[in-house]
Image (cartoon, rainbow, N blue to C red; front, side, top):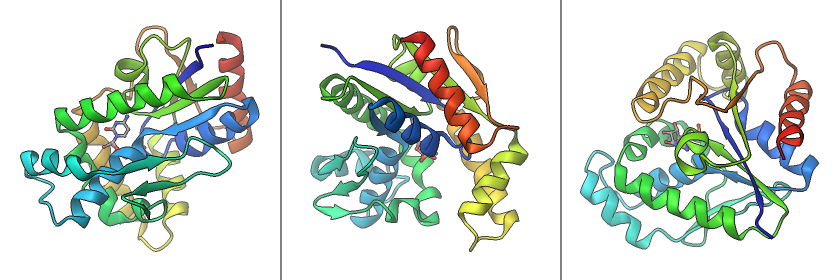
Length: 220
Ligand code: C5P
């Protein structure tokens, strides 16, 4: 039967990835980190010495983008052309250029088609896909759609905890710049029609997972 699709969007530092992964585990669902796919394109672009600002060169680089992502929340990995880049895509050098490749329409179309294919073919009863435009563009008809938000202060604090090697100012300005660039491409700060907002500002990690699972259960 057709898998149940759950769409979750939100800004950087909202806890989307870890919360979506944990919710998928609780429900026995697959998990799709779409941001990881955009990061993998950015990694591939840098790895092939392609100029991220040269749109045509980035598009051409997709020809040998041998991309494999795990949708198993218990055994998560990302590979490009056999290389494991699960950790590498989290490096600031990737985070700093990812918005540039993500704003290219051909890249978005290419990855969105791939996401829809992954969603339709999972062998689990459902799949949680998480990103910036899943509730609006990739899976607007999903039965459960959630916008996961948190105050800017809370998001900065969480991101700083993840990147202790960076100064708080660096982390804050990088996060603001990325949100500003990304919001020119998709509006992930306001809930579209029918999308349920979960604000995690005053929630613990566990409470956020419970709130998300509750919304999914009530809608599916
Ligand atoms: O979610 P994460 O922060 O890993 O996403 C990395 C980048 O991928 C975002 O900053 C954005 O540029 C891009 N992205 C996107 N659309 C999505 C998911 C991520 O443009 N659905």
